[in-house]
Image (cartoon, rainbow, N blue to C red; front, side):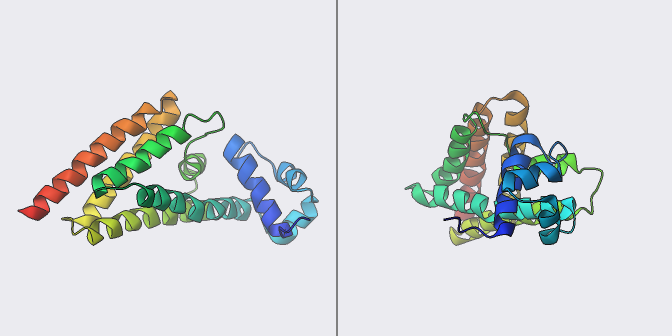
Length: 193
């Protein structure tokens, strides 16, 4: 028996199609068909495609952050290794044939001419949430300048997503992980002084 609500089915269908094909390439009709509903029913739950795009990113927010947290927590050892583990897992994920990169970055690129779009706001909030989570991890470890370090790691992460998508070479995640390791190690050294 299907336990998903109609709204959840719509967002799940949008997630599948938008991530796979991009937001501009996918019509509302295609999302409705994938969800097994009418277009009218879709518009009952979402007033516009823009709202559906924002809901798609909101749907991805918590699972993405939880994956980072799980990879971090599962790695035994010092924080440097825990941060590298995130990049290693992303390198593994990027080898999957259905991997399309970061849905937040891809959507923001498609909407770059619409800075006030609701999906841009959801994407920006997600990226700040990831950055704050890194800062909290660094603060818990007593590292120097945790907010600045978190921003640097986020830049490495987002830059690696962009370059891996461009070259289709997951090794860039590993290279970014090595840079993250060096930054965290330097922060630890600065803390000890």
